[in-house]
Amino acid sequence: MDTLVRPVASATEFRAAMAVNRAAWRDAYAGILPAERLDAMTVPSGRELQARYERAVDDERAFLVAVDPAPGAVVGFADALWGADRKAFCERDDAELRAVYVDPERQGEGVGSALVADVVERLPADVDRLALETFEANDDARAFYEARGFERVGSSAFEVDGESYPTAVYARPV
Image (cartoon, rainbow, N blue to C red; front, top):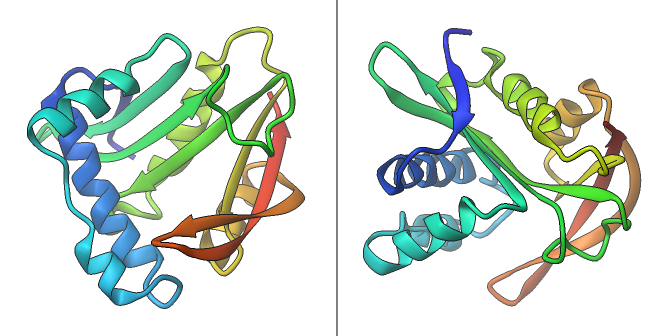
């Protein structure tokens, strides 16, 4: 793997991460989510981009990018948070891993593993576990997390466009 993992440095870099997000959603969730939803996913710009970037660099959050140093391109990102905005499946001393996405053309190169490892290194000392949810039907994601020491601890659901999709909840000590 020839990438550098670090905190997002600008709104432009955040937008590049959102472009990775869009490509990864289309790749990972084909057959899970409706094609119309995947096709409608956009990359933020303008005020929406700035507002989302400002939330991403909050003190109770780690928004990391994986950057290929040769072209300087963002090839993946991870988003974790601790504090009040975590989802209900998180316990008191958990951090929530909200997202790990890698450009589909760079998957299998260790980028996702490096992002997860760096998130864990940046968590505050009072965090005991890292918890996440992924679509139940996303076998690849479940295998990815299990291979990195996450254990299934429950089930939940994630709503997309008014439809509820079953999720698997995972956690691992940090």
